Length: 211
Image (cartoon, rainbow, N blue to C red; front, side, top):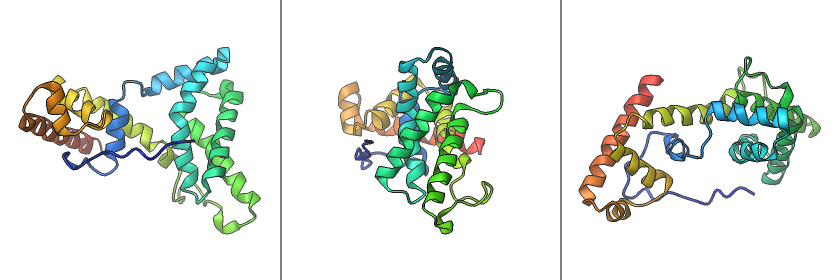
């Protein structure tokens, strides 16, 4: 269901910090919803049973939920079933969401965690059951960290110059090589490399300051 085959050619790009490449791609995508947009989408599902809003939530959380389940040694097929079940619960229980108590991502991953525990219990293998959240190898916080990192990168991107933002979007979102970017923008390859290096150094510094 989810295509994880797309790989970025990094031969001509400086490597981002660990875990940041996907965040840059997500944050550079103007379609990636902010936490405020996610909350409004869920509200539309709760108040109006808005199917388009639900589809947008599914597109955003579906791949993230599948990764969450796969990291519990659950098969791909079962993980996809659990994703469907999680989002069905989101549709049914959207009116129970309280933005004063948790963000949308935390609320949805809590549903997913409970379904994961139920599934592992049905297997009747205590060794596969997750321990308490504080000791769990993959906690709810792990589940939402990607969304939080995306938001930090999105904020950091806005501090870059227009030229640097363009380079980052073309490189990490459009997956173009630096040679292709130089040709598309009509600038020297050395300029592309310099702007990429400066932009990535700026992003590293900003994200390290927030940790």
